[in-house]
Length: 544
Ligand code: G6Q
Image (tube, rainbow, N blue to C red):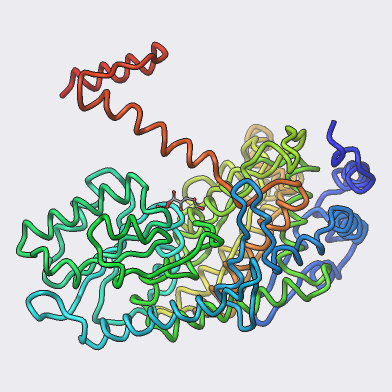
């Protein structure tokens, strides 16, 4: 048994869970009409409502005691002070420095000076592209940007670029290619003219197989379709921490946008990895995104924990995962432009906290996260919500929506939000046998038919959800929202005593594929494999 699960704060929560589990959410709401005001928080125009979670005042006190026991405040300060909290890679985790408005130090150096330099470089480049000063090899302005990157060098920029579609500059289209599957790159290139296309090769390490393979193929396409070696400089730029590898690839380091090893891949959209965002929406909007995140950082670092949105969101997750033993967490944005948010949060949460040993290297005896998945509403309602309402799986869900829409079909928006509110209410309340009986009898069905249908029409309810509402999905609000989740992940990692900032599971994948590749493209070497893997390799080869 670990000391965490035997600690006073943990044991107190365990005992309290038995009591809370015996009280349904319906009961909690009927007992206390003030639940919403007690269990919701606001930061600017962002509302976090956790009143549909199985909590009462005691729960909150006990969760805050757990945060105190785990020294959350100290760890927060250690992160903000640039300590090397990513201790397996001996790095700090300083994404807050990327949007800071005051100095942030690591190793005695104020890193915000470098951050400002690169932001200026991004700004100048964006202005040159938008203003038509940076032109392609035939003298035509750039009309298309292709970001080639994967994982942290893709998911954040894709999610934000999609979310901020209403802010896009009209003269530029931004595309993203991540998959090693050639269909992704070739499908994208089909639509493009090399003379007006700019490639951003985005890779922190500049060694990732997918990105380098796609980058080499993009260069071949460029050269085979009218481009020349001399023209590469105008059509290829790199975003990386690895200057040497960038220059080996053939990109002049002058065309490189730098970031630093203290920026984790999945926390990097605020750095030069955000170049495609700046190109898509303009520098002013990119700076608003950073400012929104900075506002959330300030709130996280200064607000008392009981009023602190990331802290409370993190603690509610702990309550669900470790005490109600929830293993499934849905992310359900009622906003089409946030359709990539579930995929983004999947990486942020599952890569950060998908760990099984604590800081001392001991195997933990508690869960360190749920499986994150999701889909935008209302599409999900016509697909998997059936399981949520009447299936056997336990889950929790975050529902998110803007109060104002940014498209011209404004009459759709109340319908969208009505679905959000109705779903969270129905998941919480359910429908009892008595309610179903009354409903069916009102339809004048014979009593025998009512009893036959009854069990199929009952909804157990008591499904906990968290709702996040915001005024409008503008860049600053999006920045706040992303930083909210980044810090929630940090809070949970601290409670669980794990390193949220390494990713050895990802590194493993990078090594494994390389070993088998040689067996797929040549007869030798034939390495030892289990019978299944050998069978799959042989079947593949026989089909070539
Ligand atoms: C993120 C992970 C991982 C990484 C990709 C791409 O935190 O480390 O998703 O971003 O593997 O790595 P490169 O940017 O080095 O190509």
